[in-house]
Length: 633
Image (cartoon, rainbow, N blue to C red; front, side, top):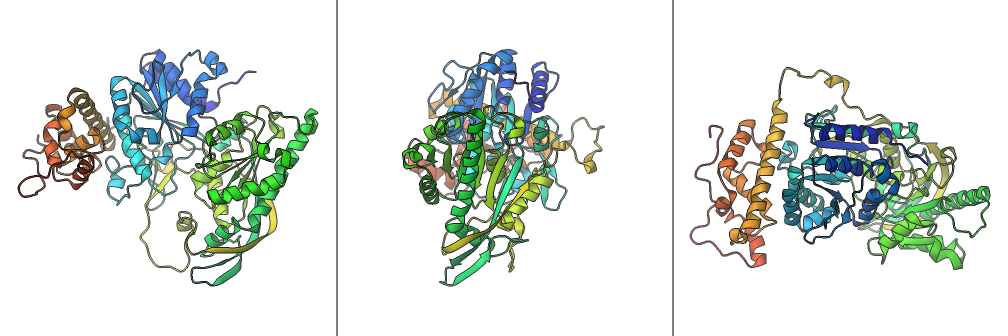
């Protein structure tokens, strides 16, 4: 059976060929592939050609979760694609031990793995010319160090920002970068790490500049994927109902309808209650009956006995709001299955479940289990084509999250017969926030980053804010809920991924290099120079760090450079200041300027934790460089 390359895979192969033959100077490749459209083959296409031509020596593939490392290994081990692409490359799922590739063509790690040992991975990138693949890059928020908009805002440091900070030096040192995502939008409205942006069509927005200088963008919209039969059409089963709860003051509220034209102050509490009371069991029952009916029809067509195991019969994925509720859902589902089969048929995979990764693998590759209950482990990146029905019993309403969840059911199952006989069925509460997600998925590209609006008191919360609010966990006591009516809708194909908007069609062809492109090039150059010094000094003189500790030598050197340049982040520097900083780094070693961090409380605190810091003598003053670089340097 032949498996021809899909159009986006062919386009990526053409981009990589241009890089390999040096027909283009682009070294940043963005693959915006609709969830379920098949992007796991793209790193194999890129690595096989770039390693064969000597552009890179190795590949490092960074994934957001440990459960995806096995799937990445499988992509390189697929015998069909090894023959079709004429490659013999193998990569390994590595932990944070020396020599992660172990003689192979590269390694796969996780965001958490890079953040736990950033110096180890940076040293590998300085030692070998590397193709860096960042999977699901939308998880990484932009950093103030390199993003002017982020530099102008107060950015809270969270886990995702820590991942960005750890992966940034790898991006700066990689020979070629391949960024993969099923969405170019973050739920919190922030920009995405490393992506180029320009002013958006609406106020307080900016959009990904798909035609930015030095970038090659490969787009694959859901409309294209449907036309090529790469994904399945989606039918939504929306269940309406009513919910009652007790608020933090002890007042009983409701019943309130779950549905509505617009979100209001009852939307979130009603949804929170519905997912934990009788409404959820009704929706779960509808999804269970749908998959049971599907499996019975397919067994009949294939002449299989009722209990005979077989691939391609269809499976049910249940996405719960939290782990406690997931365990309850599992118990409910098992009541509907004969006792002798219940444990094998329905399983639970959450972060605290023993053998969760083994259960995920069995759900993907074996006939049983045919029902999997999870919270977030399986919603993104899970390659399980047999999933035909999803019970979306989750409170999250951000577009990127829901798109990924829906895509678990849109993969074409090669064991299930003809394409025309397959479809994805998603059951969900009929709340207005899910309706808003549906409309945006059908009409908007999903490439915008939004600046937060100033806070103000208001009686009714707008949809954009409700979309970001977490489900209420404190003070709300669910009392009861009931289901009212089910309606079915087919999801429209959605918009194409436009490479350029009409209002931006006229280019400034007379400029050889526009200032914004030059600024970006110099910021990347600064990062490479800082990383080079850090790796060289780490390897050559372990005593350099002396009494100053911190989150890795690269970041200490980066902080020292910021002090030298007048406490300006790279994102805030002018073009002349960036040129001056590059010139200064060409003549100086940052190891000679670490004393500028002596009185920085962030580094002093880290040093005290490691027992390496000695209190400074004399009056504590912030050190200033005697001869900082200037545009005239």
